Image 1 (cartoon, rainbow, N blue to C red):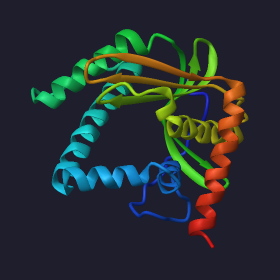
Image 2 (cartoon, one colour):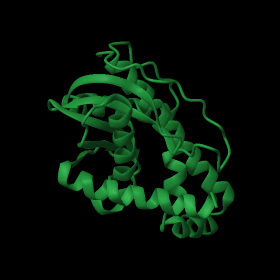
Image 3 (cartoon, helix red, strand yellow):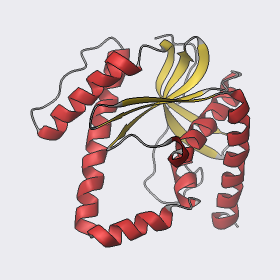
Length: 216
């Protein structure tokens, strides 16, 4: 862990729209896949949808906390004996064994970022991946997702990287998504500079669409 930058702490406001929207708010409100989520909720019912969402969130939160503790050289395996927590422990262990060895420097974890009052968010990890300045995100999934399904993950990373570059004068042009699913399959997704520029343009388009929709 190298404390190279003085990262701000951000206060999360639980409303759909607020003066500085989060990156996730912008993406969710400009997503073409939103209709699919609505159809899924209608199909399984609200109660089952909420149960599935809560389970996924709880597992993801536990895994993220375990990864963060591991990267801070703290004891990471303090999980309860519930089935979901034991699954989270196995997934965290998979990240540690297969996913985190590419991280060569950690500049910050749970990094608060805000760009010119346009958007804000919290990045999982900023540092170097295989010695290249990188925005790193940890994702848990029920099943490993195909690359073409997760463009919004890449757009989120580009938004955070661009904010970091403006705030701290860095030149991050690489995004790495590290993903582990419930079958303990690990997958690494990398966005390199050429694709980063294309995705940054797409992110700016989504931000403009969001502002046109909500900030008239």
